[in-house]
Image (cartoon, rainbow over the protein chains, first blue to last red):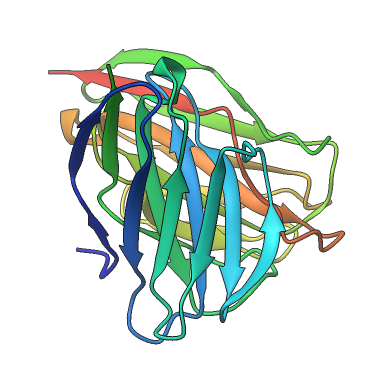
Length: 114
Length: 112
């Protein structure tokens, strides 16, 4: 158990809908990262927050947004969902904001868009 | 574009064999991490290498960071079926972009 929690574990929705994925980092970690992993694909970095502020942006679509709250938990919002958004979404946390930090991953949310 | 290329992409071996997985880049990394991921689960951190030329051992796994900090390798001795999984290297380029990138991955299957 990494200490990172993600909810929900599974999510099934329809095209055009909006969903919110939630992540709670390990106690004491200030950074949260979001990744997307499609079937048999690698991990695609979406976005990183550090202590409430956006720190780095990867290949995140404009339909997706995220935020980190004062209690350091984070939410990833996915809107106008398309079939291709079906994937595993992972959240990871690390103690600091950069410098090649070791990351600790949650169990993931499996999103299925029908 | 910063890339971490891993080779081989797929590897299927018999229990007891040795293997090496490579992680290469044209960029310098301040450190590199190796993770193992099992189907449907999040990656699990195995090791971090920081210093050029560093060698770290974790039971039957040996990790090496290249002298120029652009490449790394993972060697598994006497592989076991429990080693089966997706091996990923990852890191942030030393240029300090804060973008953490993952390698293309090596999918290992160890047959009993």
